[in-house]
Length: 46
Image (cartoon, rainbow, N blue to C red; front, side, top):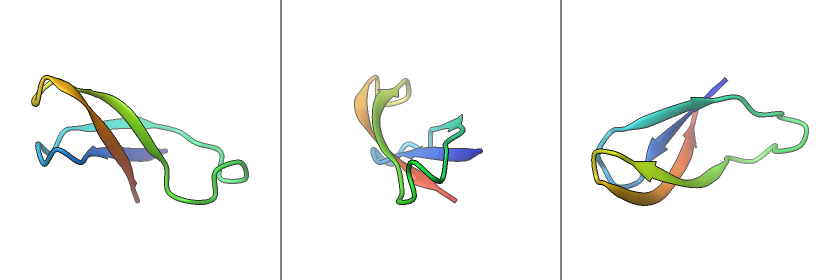
């Protein structure tokens, strides 16, 4: 399980799971931030 934190500075997070063997480095996904009301990059937080 990992947390994806918004890069827009809103503090919004998604919780998801990832396979460490397939994705050993930190994950960056472009998802919707409802606080900023737009799509932004979400970075993995450990």
